[in-house]
Length: 94
Image (cartoon, rainbow, N blue to C red; front, side, top):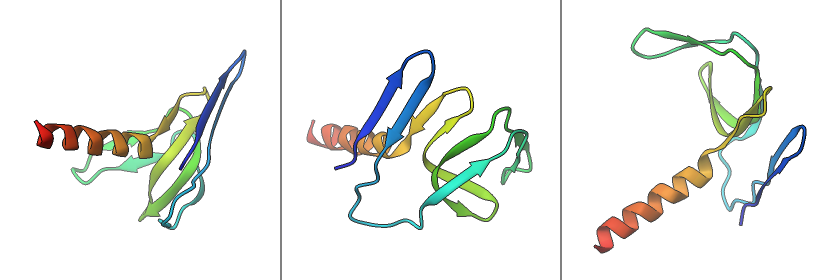
């Protein structure tokens, strides 16, 4: 089972292990400040802060499983995926 830990001190420390039974071509990826994400609809989003995390890359687009930006904002999409599955199971049960 994956474990996530977050220490909130004067700094922010976020960590997670990838204890998965499958691989998704994951690797450490750094997205620099002001990176230009070109979306399918033609619009563009520029990152304000740099991002580091575990992801797989599709084209020039990083698909982060979890990541933190340089200001300490962190996310974990694997937890979100499990939460969505749980909600769907509850809805189907009702």
